[in-house]
Picture 1: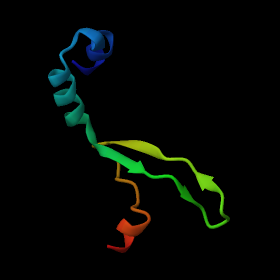
Picture 2: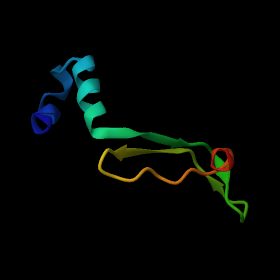
Picture 3: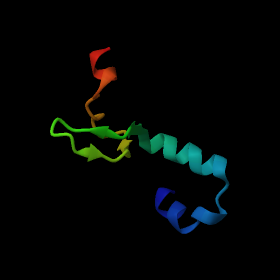
Picture 4: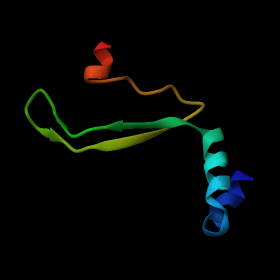
Length: 65
């Protein structure tokens, strides 16, 4: 079913795509623009995490919570 989804992506209803992706993804971790310890800017980015992978480490203010 998932293999065929890519071929039929544009004709598959959004609700169906969303439901199928939810079965595969633990979530999407989003990281804001920030500076590393050397002062270099790190651009914002997102990391999709599959259900079979470990979630990424929490950074920033959330790590202290």
